[in-house]
Amino acid sequence: MIFCIWGCGRKLKRLKSTFSNIDKHILYYFDANKNNVCGITVDDPVVLKTISSMKVVICTYFESIREEIKTYLMTEYALDERSIWSEEQMIAYFLKSYEDVKILVHEVRLEASTVCQLDCMTCPMRIENYANLGKGYLTNENFKKFLIDNSSIKNIELSNYGEVFLNPELNKIIETAALFNVELTMNNGVNLNYMKDGIEESLVRNGVLKSITISIDGVSQDNYKKYRRNGDINKVFNNIKRINDAKKKYKTELPVIIWQFILFEHNEDDIEAAVNLANQLDMRLVFKLDWDGEYIPKDKEKVSKLTGLRYFNRKEYMIAENKDYCDVCNQLLYSPQINYDGRLLGCCSTRNTDWGVNVFEKGLQEAVNSEKYKSVVANLLKGEKIELDSPCSQCERIKSKLLLKPMIKIM
Image: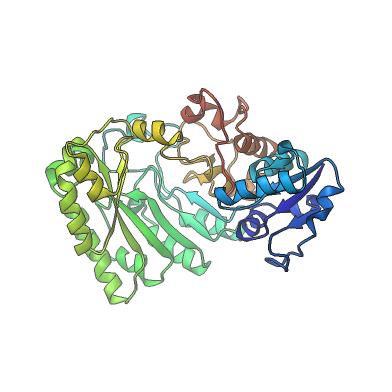
């Protein structure tokens, strides 16, 4: 099968950095800009009139432009609609057909701690008693070995189900990341009820921690503790002050501090106060929908104006947008989730199983390029059924799909 690309811009560049050897399987490159684009020599599309059985892959970030190109190809070159493919179709075909096409991982999600001191109402880890993930911490020794063995990794997200700041070696992990020039984030969320003395210096001093998301669902202790059980909101705000003081000391804007506010009926009256307080604390405030509830605001117009949201619960969002509120399948391809002990989970939702490989022992690139892993990624790209013996086959998101559709999008 002959493949060609129409669109030689930023998305193609990203595609080539995510998959190895795809050049070997692409015969022509076309673009409206006839000059050399992103280091690629652009071919004359007149060849489309002379070659049959060619798949033309439209490579663009903009859906409106994609439709324009598709119409142009069908009218100008009499291409059949079935010969015009998406990037997802092409990569799925490559992963299943060509052994030399490999997934190249540049960032991961590596859980620093599954341990947490809170007892949040709907947290599956607390409800399921840590599920299959176990109770423990990422060690600096394993973290350093992982960076040595995987030099392509440049970004690591440290938070998932547990509380990052309970890891006793967190300051060492941050220093190791700085040594290897690896950027860190804690954007899945921390509760920040505890920070050991001096840790704010490690967070700020070397600039490797780019951002941190803190879950604070209210501005009063009474409202905060209704969901964040065992939490103390005063400790949280005091720890935010410590980080801000360190940022002033080192004259830096990093880490960016994000306030994540989950909307519930009981904290609706705190929203306006949270907006004002976030400004005072130099935090970016983002509002998130509750996992299980069907929250409906008492004053929709006011809440929408304050939060910028159009939907107020996940069911409402899914019906209106025809997609999941949190689309985590892309993590398998762009940012695989790893448990604190090295077990490959694939995505952040996996709790009760894993991929049967420890990346601290086997190596990440080898793990994500196993026949099974590549096959599952390919099926998710196309929206096809998943193998029964993979973690994805147990995923409620996938099992709940009445009609399967592509679950991974090429970014």
